[in-house]
Image (cartoon, rainbow, N blue to C red):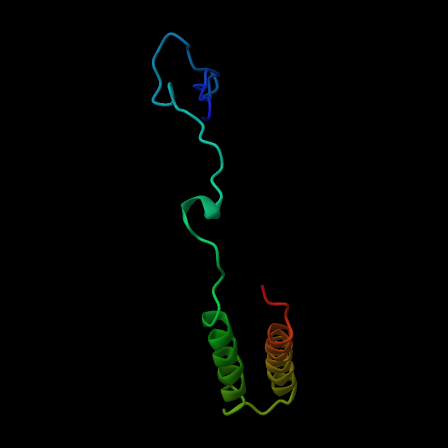
Length: 99
């Protein structure tokens, strides 16, 4: 059982201790871990799907009425970095140790 103690120090500068405050009696709760309320996993599919959608949307930005090639290099480079990370993640998950 966690022992709870009310916060007794004034939290407002210049506050008179004789007047009640809405923060009087506030109890600090200990940090709860996600495992305490049932969350034990991670998001599995959604980040990968969103990553590939980001790559596709970046590559669709190549179609347009711009004339400079610098924009194309940045868009292709960003899409390539995201795609490389997603491929690396897929390889790591395929070769990961399983419990």
